[in-house]
Image 1 (tube, rainbow, N blue to C red):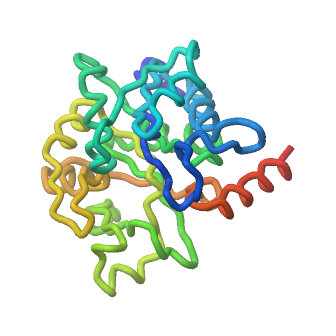
Image 2 (image 1 turned 60 degrees about the horizontal axis):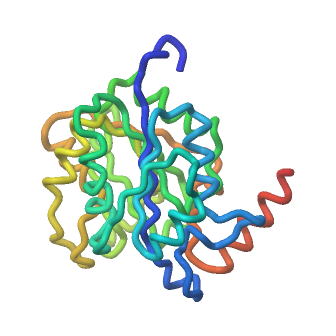
Length: 251
């Protein structure tokens, strides 16, 4: 990043889910995408911005994931109970004890993210001096995604609401959370420890850190990627096929 070469950045990749809608008894991030486990793409994305550490949160078939990615310099942390994305990130707290820098949070099932988009997200985060910056995108049909709630003249994000918890008015918002974030480390691991599970799913949502930051008066930001396909999550075999076709088309 220009003028900020000393900015410390590490990555946390969320890769613990089973992916029941994939209709196969294999960890979601191990599904092959153009001949490589899906998780490969998120690991490569993190390496593309020269992060210091890559911590991978694993859960379902943890041993299989460890074996497939051994000797790659990755740090694996196991989420033994699947209690939500906030709980998943909390498992990495000990790895980052004493660390002071930016944590790039990626998803192992969002494989299409480009290095240029990640760099742009990081640059906006640093330039705006935000405590948390969310990668968002605009969808004609935002069904199934968390909606981004903005307030104030500068349009800072005040919170993210999951669709199952959204009001009818909030469901009309078409700016959605991609699940990709830049967060300052001290705030991140404090905030994920404060997350509650008072929601429909009874899970600890990572998205709640945005609301925590806003309530405490910290600056929150967003970066909208124009290419919504980059932010596509792989949830079904059909999604996997679409991503495969896109990768092949770009070669």
